[in-house]
Image 1 (cartoon, one colour):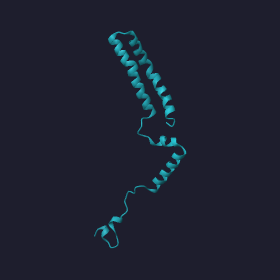
Image 2 (tube, one colour):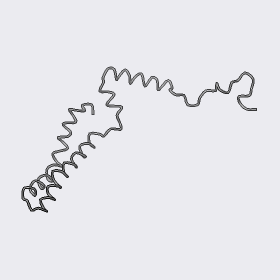
Image 3 (cartoon, helix red, strand yellow):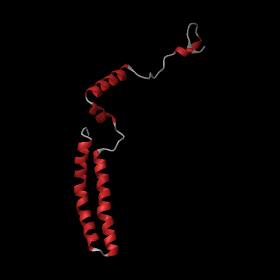
Image 4 (spheres, one colour):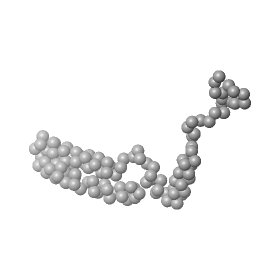
Length: 115
């Protein structure tokens, strides 16, 4: 005899072992909703985990700036023997890794104040 075969029992009325939302989840959702209504920046601080973090953006922009303002002019300057490109490449390689990430951090601080 199977579990649902007894008289008076309906096998389709069995409770699901994994309810869609438990009482704790509903309370948590209501708390987050209230915080989101009070402070709109709160939702950005807790929710967007898939976006690039500020440090990752600063490193990426610093790397690209070093390539564009340093490596490319230096390589072209070595090939063409143009002093301006050699100088621009040397200065770009020396200073962009140091100056660009803090500048990007300042810009991101204004664009993403909650981060």
